[in-house]
Picture 1 (cartoon, helix red, strand yellow):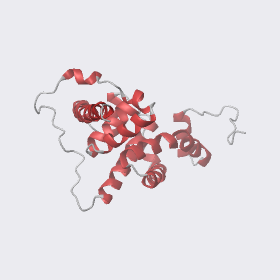
Picture 2 (cartoon, rainbow, N blue to C red):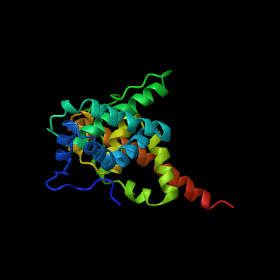
Picture 3 (cartoon, one colour):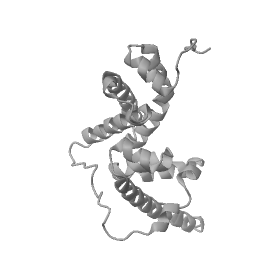
Length: 208
């Protein structure tokens, strides 16, 4: 049974639900939570690599979104705005967890730094294929965990969640060149680490 039944003339689009929530309709906001909580949890878990922290991020992100709902002007999608809040909350979790270290999410953002091969954009195997295989999925997750937070966040949004460069830039408050730079560096690091894994695995298969 559905917990929320559509009333005659009720606007259940994202914007309609947001407008209703702004007017004090808690059911409308609850519907937004149900629509996006799994996505937000998945993104938060990719960033924090901790289920408990990810659950906290989901709760904090929705609470902050509700408390600041009047500030949402509708210039972008509500989901875009929500992901940006969640990413900030997740990165704050990382900072607190690594309080003994200096963590900068803006590390190595420069786009004119050295030369990078353009063809790496079509790297293979791709994240979707790897995630479809449990063993390789575990390897990829561990490899992603080793990326700097700023690179990891861009990679998760672009290559794991499948968002566009423009959407990722908007969610993170970055320029499109900065997103492309971080994504390229993340892919380079991942491809290098995965190549070493596959090489060692092939070598190991030949061992008695």
